Image (cartoon, rainbow, N blue to C red; front, side, top):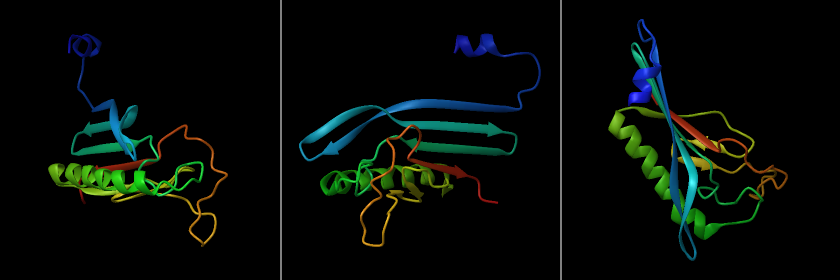
Amino acid sequence: MVQIKESLGAGEIAAVELFASCDGIVETGTGARPVEGMFALSVEVSEGFFQVGLTTFSDAWMPFDLRGHEQEAVFAANRPRLASALAELSGALDLEVDPEDATWFGIPTESGVENHYEDDDGTPSADLPRPFSALCSASASPAP
């Protein structure tokens, strides 16, 4: 808190932005595995507006990992957890989940993130690169 006070300048505050990197747990077929930096939580507040964003850096929420390998057990154990977290965040803030645009790694939805599919046969695109940024970012903002 001292560091924040020392860095404030004189004048009126127009906006406040907060960012937190959050660790998490991935449920696997062999038990729970801790993951550092699994999520990022961001908050932006300005006069008359605020936005809360939850970004994940894991493919545990998708039926196929980013290399195109099926991960049914991991997906089944973790997908409901992300959906629940998004619903709880939305409910606590009394806001709607507004998924961000798709990235190279996944397609954000109101309840999680979906794989990109190369063909209509349900197999994921295998030529996707490893993640360098968010898989899923969902923001909750006041409804107009």
